[in-house]
Length: 401
Image (cartoon, rainbow, N blue to C red; front, side, top):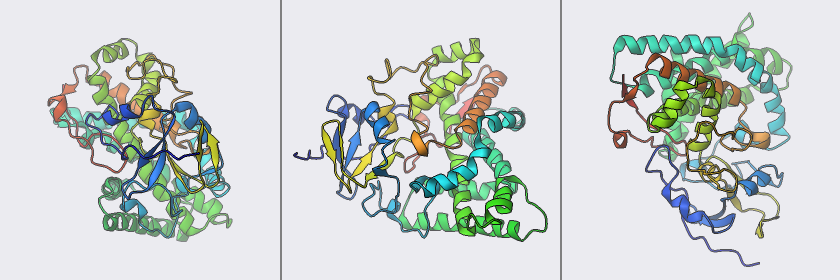
């Protein structure tokens, strides 16, 4: 079978923070699998069909191991050599072993139990906003602090250190250069290495999930010190960057869709479905879902050969008209929870999804309730987009009330 020639470069940039790249329209109607060219001249398969992506995400012939030399990287910085692999980059059974150790801390029940504390922190932050008065930046005054404090308490990390890892985490997401990636990872790794070493040497049990893992898997020889440091790095970074982006961009999107905002204010019980629709509509982790074939795969009339990369852009798949009626319409009454891919699918589905949804629901509810006249303080086209290596959002959101 003749292999198709790449017809476009990938990734593409957004011009609107809550809309996919306009270039995604060029992939529609041309088949579920197409070839694109990456930054280094390599080609990879791009999946534009939600149904095909759903099948591929459950196929063990696709690997998530980013240390493989032909894994589809989107920048030179992503190819930075590292002496370790993170949980999202592992395949079974290694991935499954570590994931099972974390699952008890991220159940729906645990997220519900955490809700009163999330509400308490949220209201403290809003009190500070009201005392300061508008206009102010919702990102720096609220959105980055709520998930940072929650993840600190969850892991047992001193909150006074949150600005250190917050800064490094955001700079790491920007993927500015190979050197900056190495520096940010090194500084975060060093901080967590010292923290976990102190927990291991402590005379008494230490608080939080890290303390539990030190007292359990580490003490029992089921996990090494370095494995826990790497695991902590993943939870620390992913536990606040994505959620803070969703909070800020969620508010922006609601303000830009006044009919849906009015409906949500009139029917606050729609908040869970509104959050789910925001996850689908925004798809902020657009270019995260990538794999490499470890064996030939025949699918949708094409052959994905062993060693070829596969890209599954969430913002494209979650706007597939074959999966969602009027996919470009933002509709908070849509029932899409079981079908959108914003939180992944299969063994790599986001382990912290219940906690993240709880944080977003609480944050949006409180902001809209306590600021009934909340509005942008600048024209929408002046809201700056985040300049990151794959996580969409805004770097600031000036608001007033």
